[in-house]
Length: 301
Ligand code: G1P
Image (cartoon, rainbow, N blue to C red):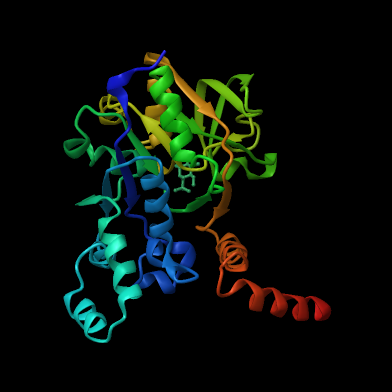
């Protein structure tokens, strides 16, 4: 059954973290602005959202994140110079960034956790369903395949139920993620879908036997705002999105499903390097030269 009024048009991108894993670079540069080749991580996240049909993006920034807001603003001096120098291609790429979506920037006044950050977007999201995309993870969909956010939005539009992305991780890594428990079913495309019974934020050893981890892509209906408002501080004293998700699962039901994109953990130094190398190997201007360089390195490793 299709719910015609439930198209997912809005998204929230929380960008209020301190980026401690990338210090000292992140002392002055927000982690979302660190480049993968020549584009900030945030650009990949925005592009995923836009490809999924998102029109309005709410950026929830913290203190010292002017660079993020400026990135989506007009840079008059730079654009004027590029126009005078006849650098039309560069000018066009800057304009494309601005025109990608309506970017609405708001502040999370206090760092009270991911759930709280999402709750800050309520005045802009209102009663519409919305996607959440965390900037730590970059998801690259093949050209002919839907994005992760697109897959979740379709699930929401078809089932009317909030749907989140999951991936299977080794037991040794479950402590890094929100972990979903529930009844699994096979999807026609070969993926797995879970009717979520419980969600545990970063379980300690023995706290959960499930290995279904949340990689930071979600689609919720607006009822989650009420649950966030009544969520008490949980793991690490923070208002956790995962705790509000448990309330959604109990009240209206919550689905979790696997996805087809390639995923890079850009919030981790090794994952960040892997994203740079893999995407540079596919880059039309860099791929051949980088491959040759890596082959020469390979002989000495
Ligand atoms: C957050 C969420 C966690 C999720 C993770 C994905 O944790 O709280 O549930 O699995 O993002 O990256 P963080 O990594 O911000 O501590």
